[in-house]
Image (cartoon, rainbow, N blue to C red; front, side, top):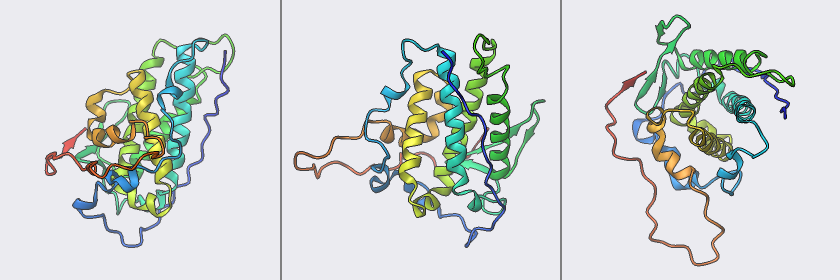
Length: 246
């Protein structure tokens, strides 16, 4: 069975200057963990049901369909705040205490601004998901032996973009009232990559505090008196001064 997969996307990123051109102070950088924001979702059912491989679907078809969808959705989510992600406001591709470097096809390491890094990611992802030799859409066309490794590569890069959205642009996301979409997209993506072991846990551990909150099925509407003893989610006491380079 073949899925119709649309690998096209539109980049809607312009080099505009953020109004204040300032980054939020360090103590505000995990605003996304505050309960008033984490409770906002687009859906309230267990996302595990969406990612489990259906019995009648080939594994590679399932990976291809979902990976292409995540690529399009994450690119769209980034485009909503792209005018605030500039070389001035985001001089490096950062998330939590990590700076991501871009490695070209020859393995050359390059430090670049966040918008440059995201452009590299989206260009590479588009090239891969629209390549019929890698993501075949025609009946009878086989997936290459390297398919799984390429899916893992795409998912790792897409995780970097999601992490940067939370770390550097959550305020703008809230201002646009899109935090529910971002939370749901992030949770769906994390549940998916965990289900099929597509991203090394060492890569995603920088966002484990958020993943633990968002990937837990949302509780049903309160039929009983809400508990007042539930502690507010707070950032784990990680070393704020340590910076990891990847």
